[in-house]
Length: 140
Image (cartoon, rainbow, N blue to C red; front, side, top):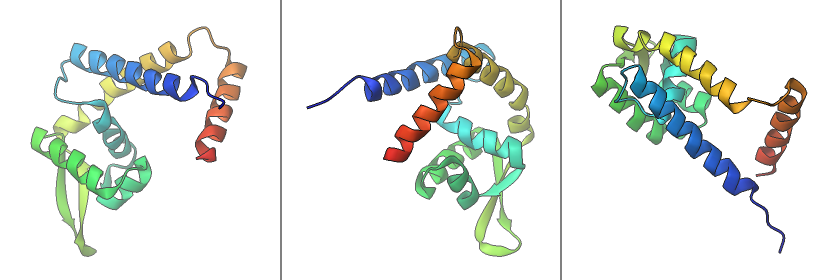
């Protein structure tokens, strides 16, 4: 049986990255946001408004997970929703003013995360590493 620590290390990296993000969010005063909200907020920073299906497709999560996360963000006041005028079965999600205020902090935290992630790693090493991770991902 061949094994190594690749999957274990990927999982630990994710845990460490989430801890880093939580610490950074807390330092800028956002104690109610968790990393799983980040993908949704970043999608809304990019597109302004999206349906639940658009968000789910964009962040590669199932709709029920997205619905739960978006409901929490609505409750916290970071996003709002309205019926889609073109499709009464669909809801459009968009950032509230409170949610829009997160964007500068998210950009700063993302930059710090990137710098920490690739400290001491050359641009060529980064490209090779990302290609290898994509290949491993696609193997599944």
